[in-house]
Image (cartoon, rainbow, N blue to C red; front, side, top):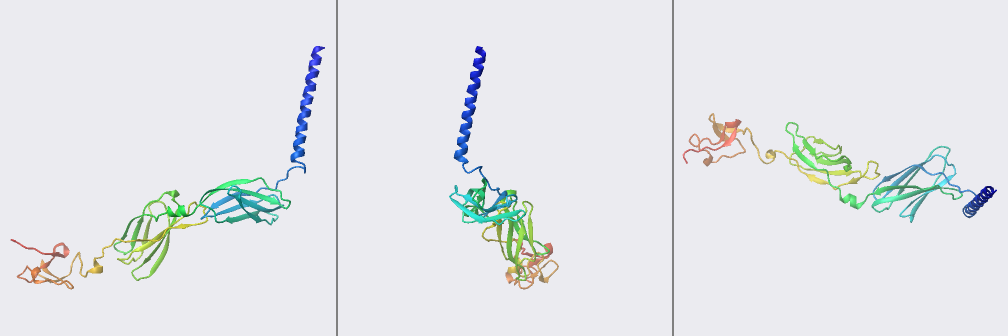
Length: 297
């Protein structure tokens, strides 16, 4: 009999606890669900943020909820936001908005959709880097290992320094004049290693200028450019300043080995120390060289 009384006591206590718990749940419903169940609008799908120069581009898709009428993007701890109206169709619709005038650095964004009754979706939180003056000032033109005129075709061959794959180098724009004074403006697509560029019929003695373009990330919406830099080209420039240059100087007189240089070279009497003052300054050695020879002094 005593055992039955104890069991009944525990059953009563359990019923009291269950009743109390139900009362608390009812209180929660009355406080937070007075107007019925909570309604959310459908969230934006496939959200992406693309970095730019003091701006970002936000994109996404609307695939389900036909009642969405707008969406908002928040940043700066929800102190700033932009609102975009949405006109839904029967299919998949695209969201796209550019947010300008952002400070440089890592930015956090929150995205919510809304229906006509003001119900919002659950938030989509994401982040992206914003690039600006600090990034721009860190950029330099791609290094050039060598630039030289090539014998035979007269082109200028540029050998570029290697770059890391993640450096963001997009291309190099080159400006130069050829032998006919025709101006060229060409863009060279960057590869990371072993890159060379040929500038046809380059005018010896001239320079070229170039600027390097960078993409901070492969999907960035803005390209950054380095200021144009002038670069010289190695070449044998003798023919620009001198006529009848070597090797194989042309001769005016010749005795089988010794002679004098052809015009516009002028050979004075002091140089003519061969053949009794007839020849000097030229020798057939090496196919034609400038040479003076003296013995016994």
